[in-house]
Image 1: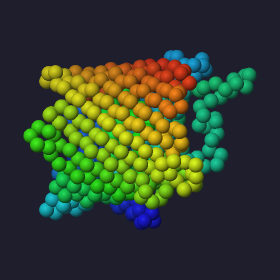
Image 2: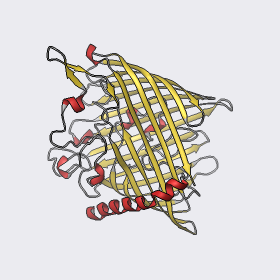
Image 3: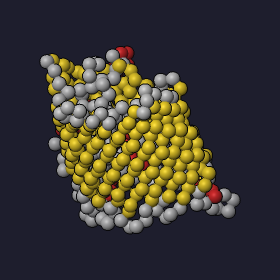
Length: 433
């Protein structure tokens, strides 16, 4: 089975390459369901942008391209150590694409994917032990852990390490999703390839300058396998709902590599959750939007099997509850309360390493303005809890650009506090045919 999936991904890559000319010429965006990277499906009235392509249903467009990028520029104004006060520039974003290959009598075959740019803040700006260490682990080749190249540290005249300002360093670009999907009448779909299993909300549902960061740190990414989705409408004003299930393993193909900043080629020897090259890991979720015209939700469960290499490891189990309540105050003003709880047992497959992530966000859209306040608490089994507070104000310039001014306060597992203030340039685009 593992060899079949490997060769499928390679074949799909060639197919996508052959399709590149018509896609770029016509563009397109198939209804943009964001199911690939999306932990939660639709946005219930939000104008934020989830990751990844949908499951092939997307609408009447033949092709689509969607992009969402954040350019961050901020400074550490307070830190446990004076030398950690740095200036930091980094980028984060993704490009989703998809195309309909065949359609007849409501039956449809389509392909979609995602290219992911995973720049991240340096210094002490990671609420979860360095950020992305749950799923975006680096698979360094020998000799790749050069402190001068990746550690952003230098030595002063006394031989002591000091932090350096960071200007767009360590920005891996990877193929996060590539999937072939069969669907019927937007009612059910089955897919195979590389994708992000749906468990909770998409990180991009937490809007603002850096609202996506805490949720991105524990989401499951870059898995290869199969999945299916069933969509249905509720009675009266009970909204629309879906049930999704997938079985998968960690990507160990050549597409586990990255460009520009090389994280290395993942192999079975790397171990880690779901690194089994069989379909022994899975995710299940139930979600919905527009319940009573105001509520979006998702209930999720995932199990990531331990790798054979990790004799002392345990399976990683997670449960999540996500809620999004929206209210329109006037034609130009609306607000959202977004909540997500994720309880993860044996995080990263480590015994006695249970984590509980709780995030609540208040979001207000007022004409061209977007105001966001968000708090995340991380309860660790060790008792060394963490937390982060974020707030920002963003102003939309035209249809594609929004400028944010934001503030962050991060408390790490050693109860040390760091503070950041800075700006974010957010850019989105959609191209469809």
